[in-house]
Image (cartoon, rainbow, N blue to C red; front, side, top):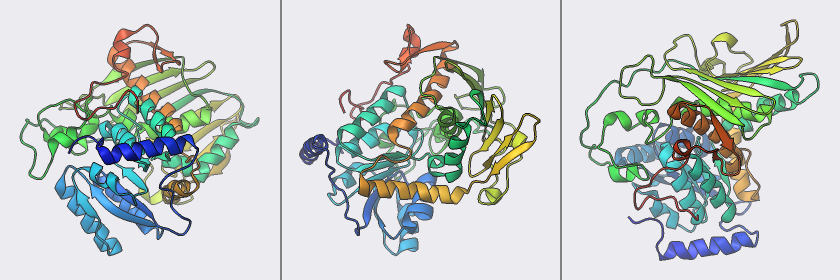
Length: 446
């Protein structure tokens, strides 16, 4: 299938542009109608979003499931049929379902290298988008996603579920109060034990897999099971390692809590210190982001068995993580008080000048997931900006990209806010935008 630029798309795109210019939305559903959604990416995260979150809403119809891996698409449809009694239509190429005039939105749970193009094509087709984090594979294409959302008046919600958590909102209010004092230092932790991916030879793609479609905007390279399902996270062609896979959640929380946008400078260190396998991205990683009056640091070890995500059994209870060994925590150093904040419903705790616990607030993980989906559906109807709007998460994703580029260049980089790139550094700026494979090209003008 060719890029989504056929005659029908052009008509839709022109309509979207003219309507958006008039401040009106197309495809806005009525108050009593079901929101019709199509799934782009039917793997673990995509299936979870469908079966555990969206399909349980009576006001949502999941009409399509698309994945280059036909087995995954069929499995998705099987599970949806068992759960809802209705079988979604499945296909390999999601562009086919963009042609449905009744489709209201797209849920994108693809590898990172497809986030931008999938979102942009969906916006151009007049569809709203729920796209998983991070926003993009590169700085440049993340900004293009923002431009597409605004140009076509589309709701684009990013899967940063903490933004819909009540305890996160309360934490933001608290740290802005006089009692906590100004924040000058923040620590972001992203540590856990991840297994080695080993070493595997190149081979043939499995039957039923459109590997060219799976590669999409990424460079052509032989199929290898080690850079395919899930393990693509650890290869530069497809992602940027755990700082942008899992760490982006804590980075987004921390950036919101400190209330900053662009840092002045960034530096980074680390490497693949523990594993001897095929992964390219670091298993040990540190980043320093410098703001005018705040220093924020990122610390990651992917080989530490004592560092853990908030356990599932306490995510929805009035129980706090074991803070020193919480692998997904944020630490905020105020002039008067100190805060631990735990992702995944971990809650937060404030300590006074004597190191005594001053205040505890608990979080509820499943409710934040459900509330985040509800916010997306509500915004499809109201046309309001969602809680994790694409532009807000663009700025958080930049921090992960900045950290990776500083790591790859091996030096301290100065941020150019006007371009969102770097000051007088051709090598670093060469990593702001990738080269695309025809026909999977993110356009200069979306």
